[in-house]
Amino acid sequence: MGNEKAEYDTMAVRRYAEAGILLLSDKFSGKAVHVYLAFVAEDCKTRSNSQYLGIVNVL
Image (tube, rainbow, N blue to C red; front, side, top):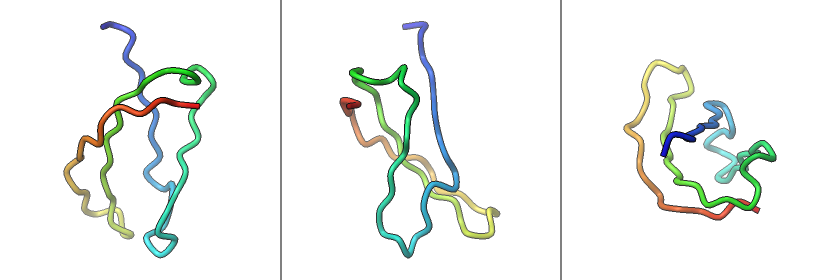
């Protein structure tokens, strides 16, 4: 390993939108990445544990 990089956005989408898109930098294009998901409360005081969603191929 040794080349691990992470990108995240804690304010990517609001719950009422029911869907969201995380835009990644071009360096991820064409690569398989491990995806984790977590939630942050609207007041930013609490957070969920992360959930592993698997491997996704970035377009």
